[in-house]
Amino acid sequence: MSKIKLVMLDFDGTIADSFASVIYCAEKMCHNEGYHFDKTIIERNMGCTTEDCIALLINDTNPELISRLTEAYNIIYKSEGLDMIRLFDGVLETVKRLYDKGIKFAITSNNVVPAISYVVERLGLMPYLDSIVGVECVEHGKPEPDIALEAIRLAGVTVEEAVAVGDSVFDMGMGKKAGCHCCGVSYGCDTSKTLFDSGAEWVIDSFSELEKIVLE
Image (cartoon, rainbow, N blue to C red; front, top):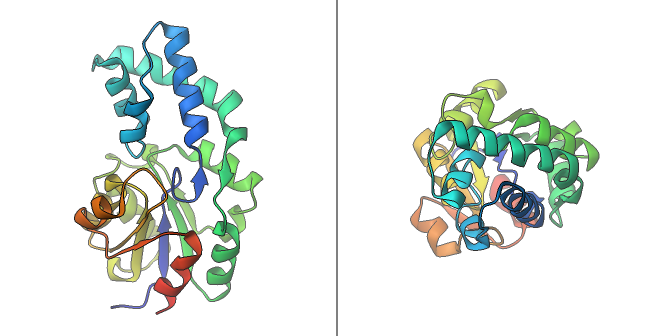
């Protein structure tokens, strides 16, 4: 295969251990707004946009209602949820080693840029990033290819020189539609089999395994 020059990292569930934060914020939003909270809905849909996940939680697609509840969720997320997020083991060290070898990194997420920026700055990852492309930067979020294609454009590489790394079918769908390489992580929301079935060329069990794939 072509030499990898750009690694596009999903945020939630791939580099960031944010599951507890998302559960906490979604449950509090539902409680405040008078909706029943079903944790399994979050577990099955961690990779989708906040709006889509809220629509599933409340079983309603009314745009005005979804917009209001998303804002309510985001207020809780910004004020309480962000400081609960940690990087997974090996993320910072692996990124540093690959960065020193000339590899570019982008975060490509269905989350929003300000939230991602706050966390990666606090946890020391920001100096190694070429870009952060969030759902608000493009017309369509994952699993459409827009986020990946924007990161590739910003990095000045070809799709063949980029790999999308993520824990969900949404990440693999984005990468596959963009025409780049796809690498799943097994410790997130979807199983290894599901990730392979969705287009992953590799599935890794720990983030540090990414180094071998990128440098082979």
